[in-house]
Image (tube, rainbow, N blue to C red; front, side, top):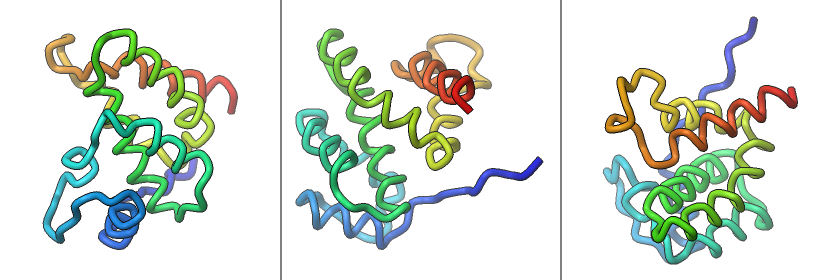
Length: 133
């Protein structure tokens, strides 16, 4: 069984996305994708993911940013609507985002208090992707 390719955020991808979307970027921002996620800009970020030419590294980081946007979305109806828009992209690109899914899935969590709001949804997306492979 072959090991999936590991993807990590790159400075180049972060700087490129920052320039494209007018986001702050400084070297040393370890959790950049989560720090700059602005839920109010979810639609703009999703449109960029879906329609703009992106490198693999840019696509990887932009999905992290999008997941954080959904995580922070409120009220519950908006949270659900944003997830519904994002899930097909996550499922379709699971090979690229597998380690992101592993992180958000919180498989070692003892209970809901150790999970993210989107944990159950991310797990479902992983199951949908596995079923279609």
